[in-house]
Image 1 (tube, one colour):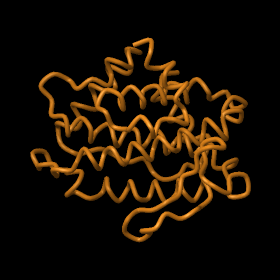
Image 2 (cartoon, helix red, strand yellow):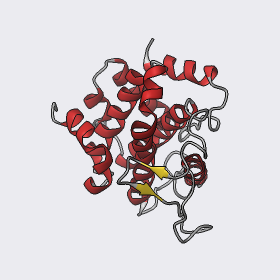
Image 3 (cartoon, rainbow, N blue to C red):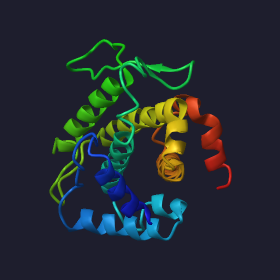
Image 4 (cartoon, one colour):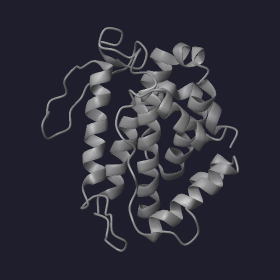
Amino acid sequence: MNAATYIIFLYFRNQRTFRPKKSGPSGSKGAQLRKHIDATLGSGNLREAVRLPPGEDLNEWLAVNTVDFFNQVNLLYGTLTEFCTPENCPTMTAGPRYEYRWADGVQIKKPIEVSAPKYVEYLMEWIEVQLDDESIFPQKLGTPFPPNFKEVVKTIFKRLFRVYAHTYHSHFQKIVSLKEEAHLNTCFKHFILFTYEFGLIDKKELAPLQELIESIIVPY
C-alpha cells in the first residue's frame, strides 16, 4: 500500500478526521507540481521529492507543499482524536519540558493555555484561513505572492511541527498499537527533509524531537 492509498484508508477508517482535505492552487501549474510530487514520492526517494524542480518558482513549490503537509498532519491527527482528549491532554505539550500556548495575533493576541485538541483545532482553523486567503495563497496562475510569503509559510510549518512533537511524545505508543508508526515516521521524515531543504523552522523550535531529527538528517 503506497502512502497516498494509506492516507485514504486512514480517512475512511476514522470518520472523526479533523476537516475536509484542502486542495492546492488551481491552474495547470499547481497540477503539474502535484504530479511531480506524486511521481517523486512514488520513487521512495524523499530527498529528491523535496527539491525544487528545475525551472520552477520557489513560492509555487512552497504553496503546493504547504497544502499537502497541512492535509497530511490533519489526517494523521484525525486518527488520534479518540485518544487526544482534554482529559488525557489538558495542555499542548511535547514532553515535560515543552508547552505550547495558543495565540493567532488577531482574535487571541495574548498566548493562552488550552488543551492539546483545542490547540490543534485552533491551529487547523488558522491555517485554513491562510490557505483560503487569495492575497496570501493565490489561486490563479500568474497572480503574485505577497513579499512576506515565506514568513507565513515558516509560521505554518513551525506550528505543524508542534502537532508532530505532541504526537510523538504523548501518543506514540498508541500509534504503535494501531500499527501506524511506519506511516507516521515516513510522513515526519518527508516533513523534516522539506523543512531543512528550505530553512523553514529555526533549530531551537525543533528541540523536542532533536534526536529523531538527527537520525533523519545525518544519513543525508
